[in-house]
Length: 55
Image (cartoon, one colour):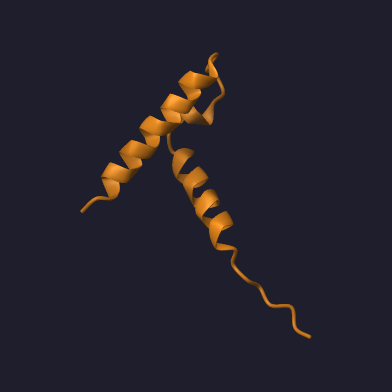
């Protein structure tokens, strides 16, 4: 029986997304007091990433 490496698609997508978010300086440090502020910054970052990928 061979051990075969299998890529887990959902985990890969999550890890890729976290890598993209690490490019935003404000998200790299945990300085937000309110959780809602941090959530909104993540949303803004994802919108910017999504818009950048549109041809």
